[in-house]
Image (cartoon, rainbow, N blue to C red; front, side, top):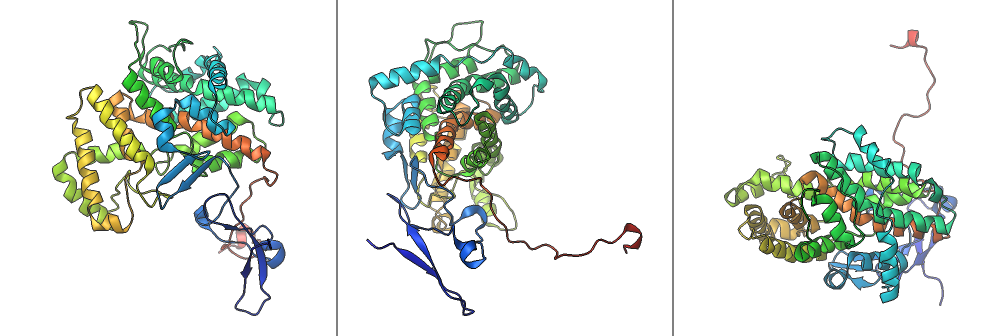
Length: 432
């Protein structure tokens, strides 16, 4: 079959130029413009990468118009319902679901890497007690390379594997320690007898004063939350990890960079913003006035938890987290929870309003995840840290994939320069 081409023509009479059109297994075709500058002396201009594929990937596929999310080809709905988080982690990292023996071996390795270097616990005393958990995570994860420098040779596949296991295993411990330090409670060491998610909940909520017992409903809820956040294609934080990785930075530094990017309210911090919005509304009777302000361009009020950069349909993760939210509230006897009722009322109003329907603003995963976290007793500042815990799996898979891609290069975007042209220096005494 002849190569498919896209032709770029110019209105000023310059000769047209052809570029290859590449097709993936799913999704839109792309025009390969790598030779654009060499052929024309021009760059493309695409702020925010609205129409630019920065890499090729086999990990996650999103169809925003249809509301589809696939990990390695598997629908998120099936994985969230039937799998454990570590089962999904294995899939994302290796491309296939594990058999029983593979899963047992994978879980065993992760479990036996959950403890952190004892000196790392002293690192926390350098932070203020009221420091935001994401600030602490950035520092502690970045510091891991100083404690585990035996596995930062990025050109050694075994070193990359060891670093991957260490990061996946230690993130729950580090995140729980961050919470414990914040509230002034003693750190809880991980228990090998507990599952990955049970361990995180135990280290977060357990104390030396009494025995902690896992709750299957709450454990399953957290399991689903982690699965839903494990990867999401080339989002801002994943692109940041790849960008940092393209320089040859060690894996701990790259993941710390991803954490910093995730911190933003337009990305991982959105679930925090949802709860702040709900607190601001206060009562269902104030929803009409709030919606009116959202529509007013001069007001700058925003409907947080609705709409998505990619999804132009109902976020498939939102349906799952909504169901999970019901289960958690019922288990904890919070069915009459004011916050959840307010969220449901706001969703109903927004979904029936032509203003939001025309703009395809549907609830996303952040709209309900914050309510679930709050019901579980997780403080608002820790929300994004848990997001980072889950997304670390995807970041590592994307980081590893970058090394196996022969087209991978140092990421170096170009720019459209609009500053002053060349001018001569004027001594200070002659400047007006």
